Length: 231
Image: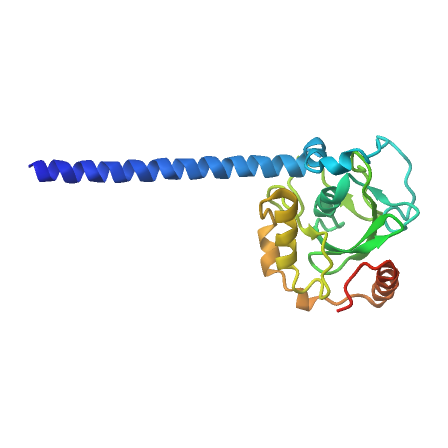
């Protein structure tokens, strides 16, 4: 009888330990999710994550006129709040078909960051120019695109998550997944990436000839400033 009671007591302790550990894990996961959600939807949180950059951020105008080449021309760049702001902006973009975008950073030219982006169905290819020294992001999207609000379901469905990287990917969009994981860990400390991107087959992508020529020009300019990858 005493042995049976002892076994019951041991089983109870094991079960209680398991439940407490599971609860603690769920609490940690919930806390991580809340932190990530705040970083991806709250501009003040994004700015606070980069205190060394805050002093250089200028106040962005709530309403300003943008041209038809907005974001596509270095003379009319997209205003965002820092490197994370660039990634969040691209991750919120959608095509006319409602398809999201992925992107990688080509380099920096005369104080502007340049990204190559493509829709996840590989139909829309763009070169986007960013000015990252602003306290808030522009609410505008380049011609023919839409910018989801921070509190909307993001492109391709799901909760806020990143789909762009600040790193240069020589074989973009192939071999893209590892680089975006690194970027999310660097910026938010958590691999918050849209899960379906892992199965996205970049080898099927084919750049249009006009985009390829523009891409080559931009890469040459960025390398002239010592930025980029020669591979």
